[in-house]
Length: 133
Image (cartoon, rainbow, N blue to C red; front, side, top):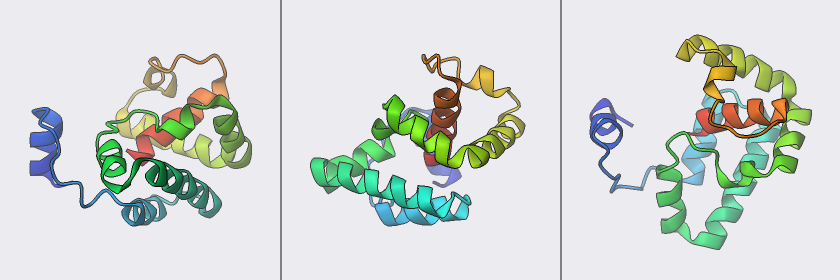
């Protein structure tokens, strides 16, 4: 998203009207650029493809475009998120350190809005919502 787009859509709160860039392919490319683990990338793409098939292409793109650092639907499920942490905990922990540096807040402060007692779920949801958005 360009700086001008960010200004209009994020800062001014205008609704995004062009959803063409919000595709599974672009998500794949961006996750690879962000060094997501290969297998996790495949799992996330499978989840998002399933969502797209249920919703339809246009509704999926609108939903994806308007995530705005919210937890994507499949990753609200504690069982799924626990599995992600079990399989990719080392990567999650490295990403938390990077997020703390990028945002200049501890991960605990960043997850204040995530109401879950399980520390691994909170950490994983933080990383996924931030990196996917």
